[in-house]
Image (cartoon, rainbow, N blue to C red; front, side):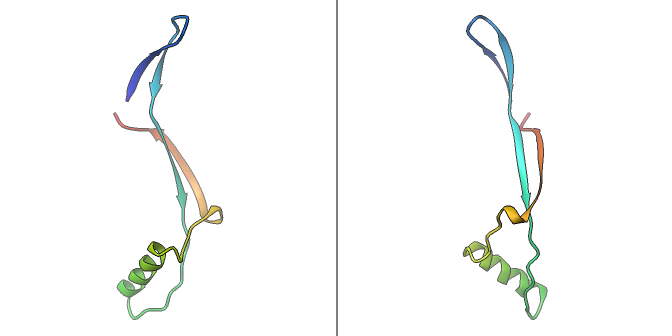
Length: 68
């Protein structure tokens, strides 16, 4: 979204929405009968807060225009 902003003294500037996305990632080893059970187990642990990603899991970031 682009907006015009006029500051005191008549100076005008554009305003832009910029999105910052950080990526956190971790490999979790689980024992299960099949991949669906493994994914289900990790999903449940993640949703319950048993697996919490933190700064040690930081992989990078992306900055780009947001919206229109």
